[in-house]
Amino acid sequence: MEFECQQNNRRGYFFLQRTGFLWLSILVSHSPLFSQKTSQQNDKGKQTIQIRHANTLSRDKSIANGAERLIGNVSLEDDSVLMDCDSAWIFSDNSFLAFSKVHLNRRDTMDLYGDSLHYNGNTKQAEMFGKITYIQKKTTLTTSHLIYDVNLSTVHYWDGGTLVDSSNTLTSMLGTYRMKEKLACFKEQVKLVNPDYVVTCDTMNYSPPLQTSYFLGPTHIKGKANSMYCESGYYNSFSGISQFSQHASITGKKGEKLSGDQIFYDKTNDIGQALDRVSLQDSADNITITGEYAFYNGNAKSILVTCRALMLQQYDKDTLHLHADTLIGQNITLGDTNKGKTKAPKLLLAFHHVLFFKKDLQGKCDSLTYDEKDSLMTMMYSPVLWSDANQLTADTMKLHMKNKEMNMMDMRSNAFIASRDTAAAPGDTVQFNQIKGRNMKAFFANNKIQKVKVMGNAQTIYYVYSDNNKEMVGANRADCSNMLIFINANRIKSITFLDKPDATLYPQKDIKPSDFLLKNFRWRGKEKPQSVNDIFGDSPY
Image (cartoon, rainbow, N blue to C red; front, side, top):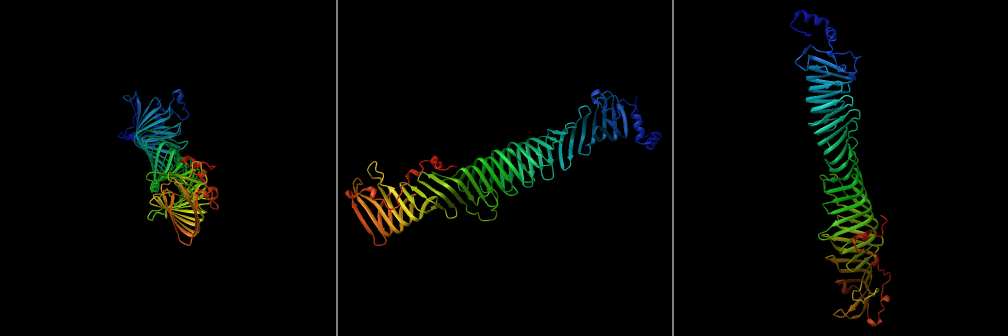
């Protein structure tokens, strides 16, 4: 049996025009290919695909044992799925092929456009080819080959695709979009482009309604102000809030890099937190700050690091290690906030249980500041500095650096310099060379004390030896308002008294070292760190 509506048949054409689609529906209802909407039990082999409209219908035995051929304004329906195209072949196994200007719609929730389509009414799967566009609300997917699963409400592609929403464009080689969950999964050569940043990775899940990307595997995020890296995490492009983990890091334009096991970052407010194995690297100044917790405030240009906080500053042949309960860096940014401006000098603040170690310099105090502008380190609250064999103390001490070396130490109130007499008898613990005054300035050369200027209530005790340094001559004690002391190889070489002095040389037989200690003398050698590990000794953090 063969039916054909031929437009060159004047009588049939006129009658078809008069009766319209109703007449076509009556005719096709006698064909076993079509079924009523009440007969959609595809598990029993019945047809669920229904014809809503076609200009021409014919049966062609040469196509799959008599497939029905529809031409012109074809409209088909299967359950909740509507499909329009220029032409289609309908097969007896409850499937069809659609060609040219194919449009598939489901309950007005999504639209799928392409060049050709194979649809299976039993599995409820549609495979589309050609120039494909999938649209759901404000999300558009374009690709060349995909499968749409009606029951699962999923879209799969594997020949490359592009997903576009209100603020992002995402490309990848493979992708799956689960409409019920409103979640897209992408793999291989994934790239997300936003007006403010670009993400590249191998695997990413993306939620268009939430505008949130979930990263799985090595991920690079490059923004206008900084760049980020992680191997797991998420980023919300609407709120600017993100969480990164597994080798996570944020790198600023000026070389600053914040890393940690976990990083939480609010891009809108430029605020972040880092947890576990935290590190802030400043490549420009060769400074690294580490700890277990860090809080970054971009607007305040500051970062706070605590829990085993440690600062390392690299010099040519040595590294300064400084520990405190809390370290705060100011004028530190992970963005480009200084664009067009002179870079502000950095300021380091260290609070409580401060200890530092360098091969030729060690120190301890309760609080410390370092100002990059003046290369000035200020030590406060019971400070002590060890330089070679010399111990320097005062109420407040300011160390001026020059070319990354000690230049001058300004010692304010109760200034005291002491060193154990290296020629003392073995086992002697109380024989010390001492310099005391209200204020002092110690001048350095090659990180060694070369000259000391004492200002106010100057006092000194030093042991005098013969020319061969083997026999002690005695101990010299001098008092003067101001004096200038020259030191060589940690020993007093000469003293210049700037006012009338009161000086006495005591012979060796009259010396009892315990009596030759100036008032307020205190040897703090046990507090001196002997290695890097010692700087964590007194700190609860």
